[in-house]
Picture 1 (tube, rainbow, N blue to C red):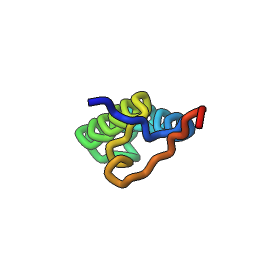
Picture 2: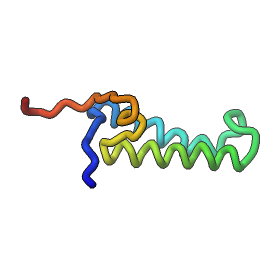
Picture 3: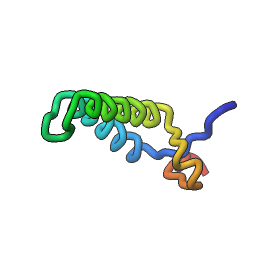
Amino acid sequence: MKLKRNMGPVDQVFRTAMGAALIYLGPFSEWLTADFMSGMLLALVGVLTIVSAVSGYCPLYHLAGFNTYRPLHD
């Protein structure tokens, strides 16, 4: 099964930045999380966010029928 892209480039850049921030801040920021496991959970969310950005496919967008991807040719 091939996944159809549903994220545009701006969305992908934003998700990559947010994912990187969650990966870094999750386990290493005491003001963001109360304990290590919560930080690791945030880091996992960050990894999943980056994976969806790189693939260009968001399962939640698919379920909601939302699409920010516009092909270069019409």
